[in-house]
Each structure stands twice: as C-alpha cells, then as structure tokens.
Image 1 (tube, rainbow, N blue to C red):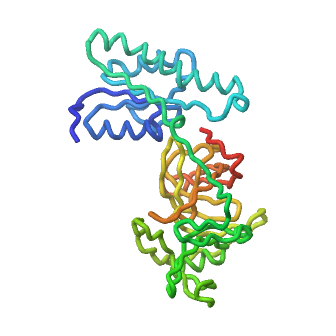
Image 2 (tube, rainbow, N blue to C red; image 1 turned 30 degrees about the horizontal axis):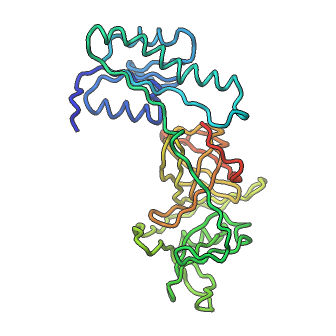
Image 3 (cartoon, one colour; image 1 turned 135 degrees about the vertical axis):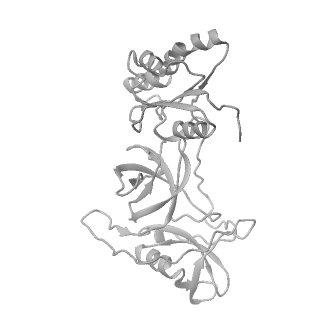
Length: 328
C-alpha cells in the first residue's frame, strides 16, 4: 500500500514495543524517516531514550526531533482497576504521561505545523476501555453444548490442560482435562487411549474441533527429541513441554506462542511482545485453531530474556476469576 508518505518525518513515542513499535515499522515501510522515543528504545541515531512524564521532557524531545510532519503520541497507559483499588499516586503518574505528556508534546510541535499549514498529530488512547471479557457459568449442569460431554469438575483437580478429543471408533466428542502424563502422551503419539462411555470400552482418541461450521485446525506435528521431564521442590511439578498457547491482552492483542514448561499452577512461554510483570492476561492452553478453546485468567509473575534471540520468557500463574482484573 502506498500512502504517499515517502520522505515525511515522523516522531512516534512509546515505540519500543506494542502499538508504537508497529506504527514505527509500518511508517518506515512507507518510506518515512521515523524518529522513535521510549524509556528503553533500541539504540540508534533516530532513537531517543526519555521519560515523557518528567517535567521538561516534552520540550527536550521536541528540540531533539526538530521539524516533523507527523507526531504519534503513544507513550504510557492508564492503569486498570476501580476507584478503590488504584491509589492517587498511581493515577497521577499515569496521567502525567498519558494525558499531560500528550498535551505538552503536542503543544511543542503544533505551532510549527500551524505556521507551515501542514502536519498531523495522532493521539493513541488505547483500546483497554472498549474490550470486555466475560465468563459464563451454566446453572444447569445437564445442559449439553455443541453435543460435547463436559467432565465432572473433579477431573480438573490434577489437570495441566484441556482439549477437545474425538473417539476414532464412534466419533463422539468430549472436552477432557489431561494430567501431565496424558498431555505428554498426546503430544508424542497424536492420540490417547481412554474409556469411551458410548463404546463402553477403551478406545483411541485424537484431537478434534467442533463440527458445526468450524475451520479444521492443521494436523498436529510429531515432535522430535523430547526434553526430559523435570521435577523440583516447587508446589507444582513442572513438565518441559512445547505446545501452542493463545495469549490475549487488551493492549497487546492476541498471539499464539509456544510454552517452555507447564504445571498445574501455571506455565512459561516465549514471546517477542513486551508483557510487564504483574500484568493480567488470558490464556488458552493447549490452543487449537478453530477448536473449543477455553481462556483462563493468569498473572505474569516472571520476565526474563531468552537466550539466543530477541524473545522473552514469561512465567504466568493461573488466577481465580474473582482476582482477574486486567492491569497494564
């Protein structure tokens, strides 16, 4: 797409990750000269490390950038939570960056744009306030959705994942909870032996998807050399396991990542996106494209750099629904 922006000078704040980084990359692909500002940007002649919530920072940034054609204000985020849970200091710190940072930087560049009778200022507010995730509890436990038999809650006590399976003999479907051993067998053999209530016998089960109008997922690939299972003195045993997990967050959107290990209490995964420690996400593990995926709230409790590439390793802990308030 040619937006006729070749040669334009663009300043993007909050451009080290997320929406700001995506804007900077897209505008660079359109031929713009892109200047980026963030607290911790990648080093380079067109990058400025700066905290726009600090007094005098907008003036400093405007002087460094010089004459620009487009300003994209993207730095900062308003904290999540209600009036009783977000204290005054947190509100003031967020507004100093997200509100007054936008106003003060816009004031610095607007006068020059007005004199030239040309220029654009774009303020990205974010979409956290427009997205809502809902959990639904069925009051009638005998209700059958999509013709799938849901397990009794007790089956989930030792589970590390949930998946939709189909009996290869009678083709009945069940959403089942799997423990560590069952997950490993399923991922290794692409099938699992378990009792079938309709066949009244043990049969072979494979991953499946809902039948009504759902897109079939790609056939699962057989993994190569398996890493050894690890045990430690934590509350829950970890299992080294590489499976797809779908992560979603109001600001960073949705992505399909790969786990590093899993346990009953949470999991670790690799991603190039910038999640913050303490952020609340929603995760579906294991994830199947087009399948009956169930998202569970979880909190990021560990952030570390992955060796050998630019990705990060995140550790997350599952949360009860009542604690799952999205925070940024």
